[in-house]
Image 1 (cartoon, rainbow, N blue to C red):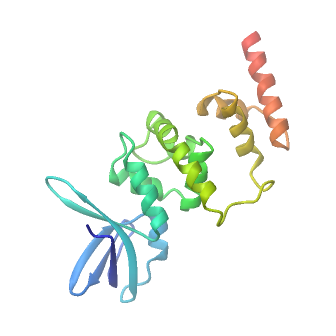
Image 2 (image 1 turned 135 degrees about the vertical axis):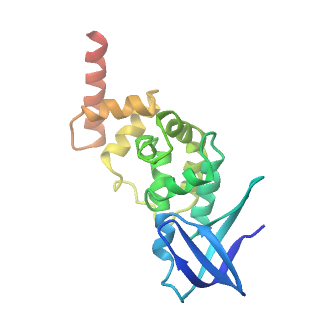
Length: 198
């Protein structure tokens, strides 16, 4: 198994790079986020790697960090998410943001990714949420202290804890008003009660 590739950058394209490691050029598919950390052609770079073996091809994927590679492996473990779609999902933002989106049940974040529909995005949240939440809790680096979370994210979390599905929580919050998470939840619950009464 190829775990990492180090060497001179020969090619740097929007979707892949080629790195010369001791005379062998390795083509690694990369996300937009990883590409940002790859230096210009002629410079040295090191990428974490994952090899996907298929009957008709061997594909190598490169990552700027082990954290990104771990998230990629989690994503492709979800039914309907292949390696190309996994890389596209990683291009949607920094790894830390994507982990928080999964932990918060933000399915809409992944619906914007080509190849991921509503059903697949909800499956990503359902299958990875607990696993990702555990990783975030165990890693204190870069985590916002309590009180710095986005009120909408906290309100969404509250609605999910009350038994609403991610799409229902999003729909309720779209019509909610308030500055704090508590106000948003109360507003969302009032509109939910009104809808039931109607």
